[in-house]
Image 1 (tube, rainbow, N blue to C red):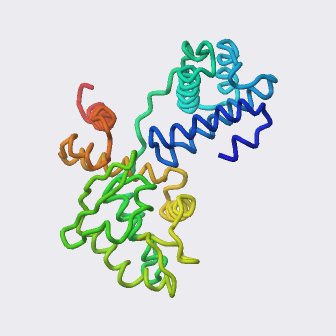
Image 2 (image 1 turned 90 degrees about the horizontal axis):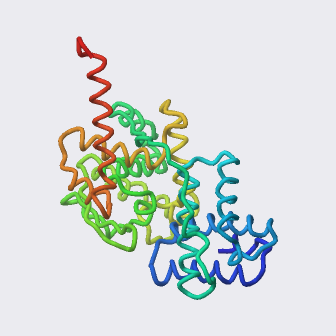
Length: 307
């Protein structure tokens, strides 16, 4: 959490922030990526407090409202600001419960209204074009084909995909064991094509990429043999997206959305999709029903003789 500690602010502020991040890590057992997101949001709060020459625990309700208005004025999306507000509310709730503040200044803090946007996804044809982009005659291209095939076939989060170990896969019966948020494990089926590409990668490409080194990770860096990072995968995927003509539309989460949308479009049960995605609550998965409703409305308006 060096990003927070580097902000010039009273030691009491830094100590409170560090204690809260430790609470999220140790007691609530949130993932490292989630805690890092909280840390980045608290950096914004720390900078605001430092500019006001106040320790973070001394910021009052009206100042927090000014903090939120300032983020909106900077051009941040309502959804981004809402996330920071949620983090701020949790942080001050923690300070209040632990006696660091007399009164919780974030009690009445409310986020701006978020835009109602449907998740972006690719068509089946666009996914097919993307999957054909890697040059599978090379070890790196074969790795990339297996990566993208597996991501689309399972709908996993990037962190889940990149943390896979060879032992997590059972390719003979086409399923894998995935560790998701809160260290919860789930079993996810794999399609035959994705299983075949991953099997070929493990036989033909992974030993070449590793050389004399070893790695506990299934997917490894093309140089050095270490586990592939999130940034590394993002770079790989964006490059293939450009080659496939998808431009800025493509991201790992777009493939996750595509997985869920295509399954639902073909009659898959929403509860089954929820389990495969690792959503704790089916209400999170229900956003995909809105995608289908929107598509049906578009088709109706286009083709019905009396729309």
